[in-house]
Image 1 (cartoon, helix red, strand yellow):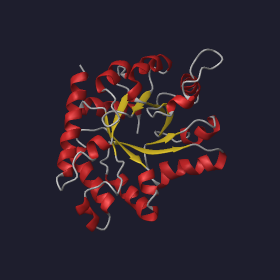
Image 2 (spheres, rainbow, N blue to C red):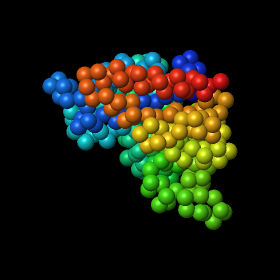
Image 3 (tube, rainbow, N blue to C red):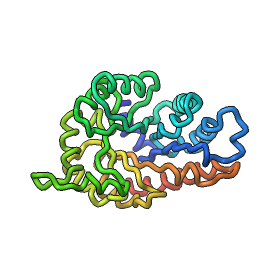
Length: 268
């Protein structure tokens, strides 16, 4: 999916919402457990209720891979159920060298035709390069994460006085360009997005941490948006598990619509 197509969807829907399908089989409504593929049925209904309010879906592969073949089948069917024109992300956080990286790229861009995949750049450029060789596909690199453990390494000062996460973002940006590379930047550290924008003014940001993790949508927009909006704000549990009754899909739709209205109000 081309960058201009993502931007067009954002302004058409007046939304930069990404719905995270972290579809834990232990948390979905119990009545769905009687159907043949409970996770896919849950996802299908969530997608039907939310797709008009969002511009992207992020499938966290761990919730599917942990279930073996059945989980993989659920993930594949879910991907194909997402309407055309909606950006799709495999939240897989891969990162390995050589032929292994080539096969990971084939997995998420060919076998499963996602638009993007999240990657860890810790092992360097050769782990990212195979993903950048696909036209109109995206590598989404971990930049500044929203979890407490981010303090362990990401905020260490380097020899030139910059934080590790700043050096990671700056270096990684030189491997690709704003048309094939995004960065994960957590909403729980929204004020730091202003500094990140000085490093990568034109790249898209994938921003987790809104909702259940306590991040502020208003501050995220204030510090992170550019003229193209330039961000996908992800919300997972706060939307998909907002109700566990038979009305779960309607509740998710209302939650997504509410977020879309908030986003539209910010897009003045």
